[in-house]
Image (cartoon, rainbow over all chains, first blue to last red; front, side, top):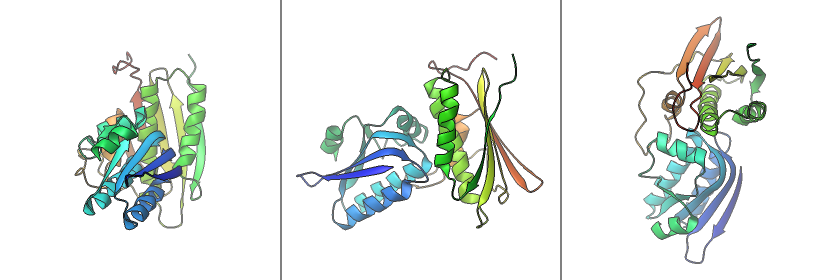
Length: 111
Length: 145
């Protein structure tokens, strides 16, 4: 999985993931979010539009990010889930704490 | 109609990991392009959850070897995963999704939601797992028996 971090002028951060967010790559996302939170970036949008596969390990890393950012008064939102990602979110009843936003812009408005 | 031929693979973890399973599934889907997308997503998710579970929990510390066989039948997809690891200590039935802020514990409930059968047996020092999903297609209904 590839990760691209973009800091926006308003202080929010977009983390764009490309590839599979699974047992192999979940720790990389945890490290990225932990580093951002440590640096004070606690409003994070994870762009999932190029994530072709999400499993429960990847979901655990996203939930860890939600908890880490909220502890510091921020939040982590997700944008652009693909069909497989939406299936996993629905199966696991994640719509409340990881509500999928269609675009980064829409996620930022709610962040 | 002749019996479909299974796709088979032997893995050693490490260095093999769930990305090895994804690569194998890519070949399976290439050769079976008529399997509907919802069935591909669902089966791939269930199988990767199962393989993750085995690689995480069955490894006695020295790595494990697994044999994976995937068969696409006209009405269903099946996989069997046999591993040399520790006995599977998992509750397969009646396990609910954990609290929404929990970061683990969703693998088995997800598998159960995505496949029609999930079986486990321990024989001659090996664990054997089998999952099977009836093809539902785009309308969500099962294929005729």
